Amino acid sequence: MKTDDKTLYTLLVYSENIAGILNQITAVFTRRQVNIESLNVSASSIEGVHKYTITAWSDEDQIIKITKQIEKKIDVIKADYYTDDQLFIREVGLYKLSTPVVLADPEISRIIRKADARIMEVNPTFCSVMLSSVTRDIKALYYALDERKCLLQYTRSGRIAITRSTVEQVSDFLDMQEKNRGGDVK
Image (tube, rainbow, N blue to C red; front, side, top):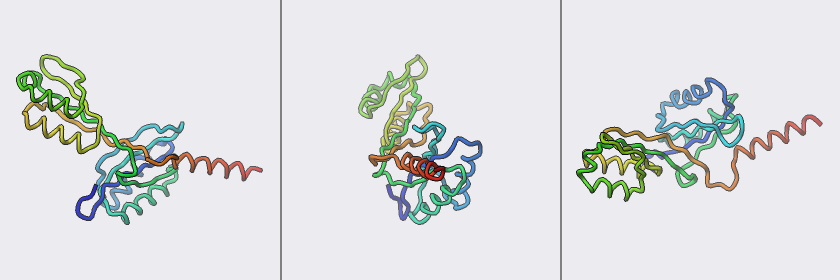
């Protein structure tokens, strides 16, 4: 995704689960005056390692510098940046809709079905809808529902992503570190 001379990059950062590391990582963006578009932090598939998925609009030179600075942090195991075509990406959009308005306008139900969203709960006051998709689709559903004047609340999660690569780079990196440690002991 591009805007002017900026591209939306996704950084995948792996670190030990240490208090304060999130602050250190986000400070790199602040110092370079690059705004974080979305941020998601969770446990990774490797025990004791957390994964930060960060998106930011930037040019490639700037994102390379940011990635290198983050990777220099002592508790960071690995950091890489990607463009959208190098990743499988998902976000979740949650929409709270007025039940009376939804019942009075059958087009709203069609919009929800067409978006492949799920109705999670319905009560006399509101109904909640969830869509797991890419940003473009989540925003499109938001605009369509907002246009129908049924939207009471809306939120969107941060991006989650996995690489399209057949190998997980952080796993290879950790395997190499383990071999190097084993080699030093002999």
